[in-house]
Structures are given as structure tokens and as C-alpha cells.
Length: 76
Image 1 (spheres, rainbow, N blue to C red):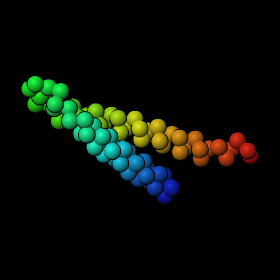
Image 2: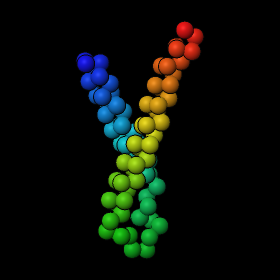
Image 3: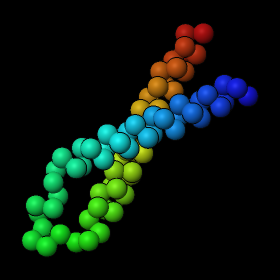
């Protein structure tokens, strides 16, 4: 039971870190320069894209870590 809680906490922290990294990476593009009149919803689009990209990267990272952890069963 305790291990499940720790696992959930680690997943939440990893996902938040990857979302923050994606948000900073997307902001580096300065998307407002590509529009003559940037739409008012551009910040919302950036947040939603960062959330989607961060979630995708975090899921990949956690999946790879889980797969590496299961490699021990290959030699047993």
C-alpha cells in the first residue's frame, strides 16, 4: 500500500516536471511573431500543447523506466 502511494507521487512529480519543460520549450519559439495579430487564445493554446507534449514525454519516460525495471525477469 505504501509503495503504491510513493509510485503515484513519483508519477505526478515526473509528469509535472515534463509539462514544465515542454512549456518552457514552447515559449522559446515566441509563437506570437508568426501572427500579424496574435489571437487572444494563443496563451491557452501554448498551455494545452505543453500539457499534451509533457504528458506524452512523461508517459514515454515512465514506460521506459518500467520496462528497464522489468528486464530483471528476463534473466530469472
